[in-house]
Length: 187
Image 1 (cartoon, rainbow, N blue to C red):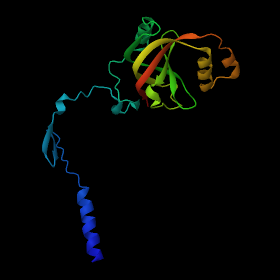
Image 2: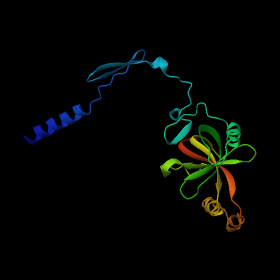
Image 3: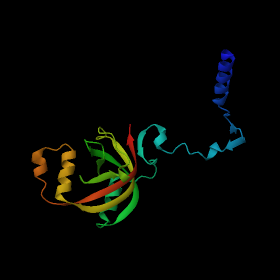
Image 4: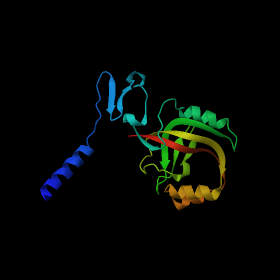
């Protein structure tokens, strides 16, 4: 009796896990319990550079690298902003520095040794501590602001700067900020 009960339980478990999906190569048809669904694969753009193509590691919201501004184009956009202005944008740049405590911020290179200081929306995700030196695509809100001396010193400490370098920070600075909701980093 126990053997037959075990056999029936095993059979039920195996049939419950059965996958009823059938994919054909020419016409993509997915068969489900409720009938067949035709998928138009001609509308898929294989030239898109997305987070899923294996070139990037993705963090935060899913984004793609298409139509991202260059770092020079982004710098020109920053120059047109005043403190308090915000613009939704996506751009690509080289990662110069990353928070060495958690990966909760990074700085991206712009034109003429300027940088964009990137934080992550709602503190919801972080980037790898070893991401400096790689390229990134960020999507979110760009803004210009003034950063206080105490905040600059805090960031310098998080960035692993020496006490002597931190002590040299004596004036607030105008910065090019960015609140990212999605990030791609080259693998």
